[in-house]
Every structure is written in structure tokens, then in C-alpha cells.
Image (tube, rainbow, N blue to C red; front, side):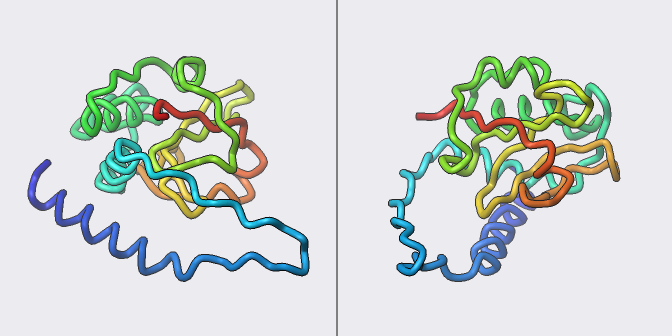
Length: 166
């Protein structure tokens, strides 16, 4: 990883940590039982950090590297290859088919989130980075960016969560 990219990723991590605020406390009045936090995935963290380093990279349909531009599945393939040496190939649909399904509540940084954005199942994929946010390469606005799972557009189109990690 180049030094400027490493500095950017480090600053982005600090910013995300500062913006996340304190963890919410369980509220006894609702009868909700606090769940233990999920174990950290070191490889997943590497994927999430690498994804943050590609923010503002240009979009290109079929793009598989940052220099030429990235589409959603190309971004995932590139990041997984660079950050973990895992070969993740194919369309968003094929990536979903090859990854292990997980519950939405079990998402950890580096896991994948899938959406139906083209009236086709699993037509868009992003990388979960924590705090209900994900990095993806949407054709809209033409740049890799961060969005929230709770944003109306994505909340209505969310299909599944998947992982390549234990």
C-alpha cells in the first residue's frame, strides 16, 4: 500500500472511531437482552480499511481496478484480492452465490451487503464497514462512496448479507 493511501486509511479509521460515539446502552424497559459483540475478523477489518482507501475512485461499468474505474463487483474483487489474497470473481449475483449467508445482525466489517437495484436479485454489492454503513461503487454520482443501510433507497432494496470469513 502506498504511504499516502496508508495515511488516508489511518485518518479515515480515526474519523470513523470519533464519529461513531459511545455504544448504545441496552434499555431495560424494552425487555431487550443485550447481545455480546461479535468476534472481530482480522481479514474483514483489512477489507474494510482497504475499501475506505478507495473512496472517490471513479465508477466504470465492468471496471476492475482503481486506475480505470470500478463497478460494484469489480471493487469487491479488487479489494478482496489486494487486502486478503482471496479470489472473489464474477458479478454481484455470482459473488452472493459463492459467499456464506449471514443474518443482517451478524454483519462485521469486511462482510458483503447485497441489494436489488436493477429489478434483478443481487444486482448490487457493497462492503460493510460497521455502524450500518457500507462502501460501494454506485453508477449514480460516479464515485466509490459510503452510504447507510438505513438510507431509504438502500433499505427498500436490501436483499442479503454474506461473508467469506468465519
